[in-house]
Image 1 (cartoon, rainbow, N blue to C red):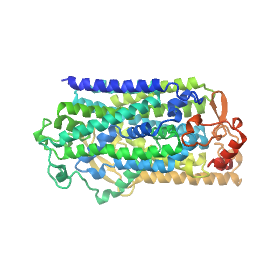
Image 2: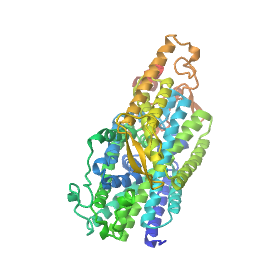
Image 3: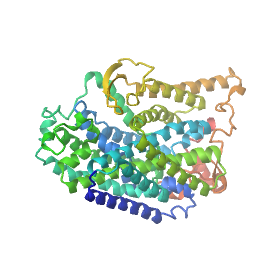
Image 4: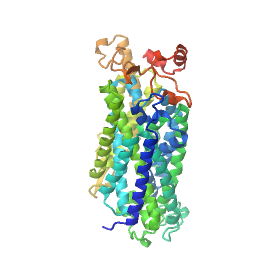
Length: 596
């Protein structure tokens, strides 16, 4: 095996830069929030709620612009059967950020939540919050594993180093600075990483375009030269699949802790919305070089390159088209810049997902469900341990699991069909309860898993209208297999069924118990009749700095003054009478929970 010394030096310098920035950010903000009395654990989770527009816009953009984003966009543009028409991630995620900013960012930030699971536990109880944690955790861990796996393959293509070694080193660096500085380190390193991605890929594109083996991409977009046009088309029988995918990206991209961690760290509710819109624009801009690289791959006569006569798509290496273009169509020093960009993209997403998973576990599972008397120091240590555990788990999966992408596809679908309709209900639909939430959870999971997952070779037991069979290659065995392909938009239908199930069962349970048709003693979830239950979190207390603070006792957030309200929930008995009266008048949810 040949080791490219220049490539190793370039990567080592880049990793040292990221590590330095992460440690510097942790040191710079080590006393953040102390003046306002904010707990250290909350500062780690949401950065003291003082993230500004510049850093916030970069970190939210970098969360989506990861290794899967830039590699996947280039891959789909390059693939003959797909093309630009099927490279839906840039537009889908941009729309997701716009929708999130318009409808979800303001209510989540203004109510002072710390994690995405807070409203679920507030309304549906501790146990339901624990159930919803499962798909959220799966999504974060499998996403981290998938992009670490992609990084290992990418580095091995260009630098020709051991895949396992590169994955382990990358994961350790991301885990270390996340452990040290929490969201501050993640946010500040995201600024550097996004800059490296932008510069690294844009430096590579002109050199690749000028390579003699590359035809005019404007011509190959509409005419077949070496393969079908890279512009791509959506066949009539694939229309519903295309719509299903864009809805999955647009709506399923909202209920992720990595997104709401940025929203909740913004210095005001208005800033949270602006950050979402900035990141939407950033996602589109950052996708341009990936689209061009995919188009270059589709316009190349590979027989004239050092890669060989057989193109990547025929070697089952289409997913590596970006690093292949960098290596074989660009000078070595340029390809190493691009390699740094890919490494940056991976680390900018991996650190965010690991921090998000540990934040939800430490707060919503450990503290709120099991140890409400836990001290702030104890919560901080739980976060540090889980950052290491979840990071290690994602690394192990990236190294030993051949179906990590399939696991992530399935888990991201579960986030869409289970968590999104529940988030919609808990924020905007008055009257839903734990019975509806449980029913929605089961409906969504059953209908989604029932449709099967070809990537995992999970056969369907529900055959939706329009299903067919196709020959596809098993990426683990390299053999062609017959798989069932669902052409019905069953993911979106599953999401809608989950949402309607939540509303329908909630109102049915409310009617049956309140009308006396079912005895109150059978309200075993304490969701309708038992108003004083300790299970429902708006009747439970959070423990913060030794004080019992009701979850329903929330102070309104005012622009640029929200840092003084960094502690998410404020005791009423410490506020002046006038402030309490103003809060009761301004709170959008006070009547909602009183009536519940």
